Length: 178
Image (cartoon, rainbow, N blue to C red; front, side, top):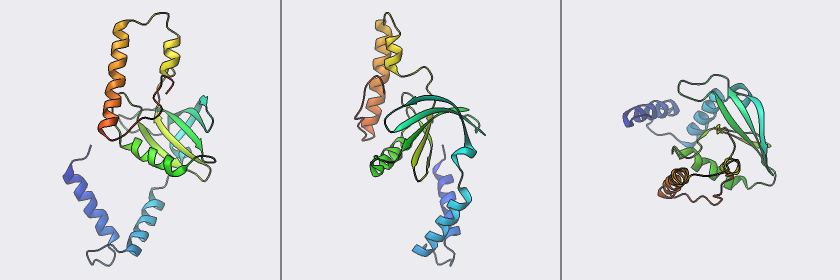
């Protein structure tokens, strides 16, 4: 949502802040000092940002809960889904890669990743709350499924998969329960 000029101005201000000896370069020590200062000033905890309100589900490595946003920004949701993934037994390099890719995606038929936190024991992913369960659960509730509904649903899925593919992403676990 930022134009290129705004981003360049921000980058210049941050670069100037990091270039403590004002030689026009940011060496390793300056970068480390700047980075550590930035992280310590901008650190926030999951508990300060969200309040868990309900249990939604549990899997082999994760639990999913509903949470309210303590101070939602204008235009942002006030309720979210929180997936808490236990790090034990999970390839964290792959998980970090998946999270970084997910954070860059923005499509109306894909659940958005809104925030992420990491503790020594778990990775906490905050995502859009999709009430009503997964597609498989919704389809099981129906006695009949109209052709027009099937067409609309297929178009939404194809649109999302095409978007992923156009961004070099392959969904390796595409099924109605996901």
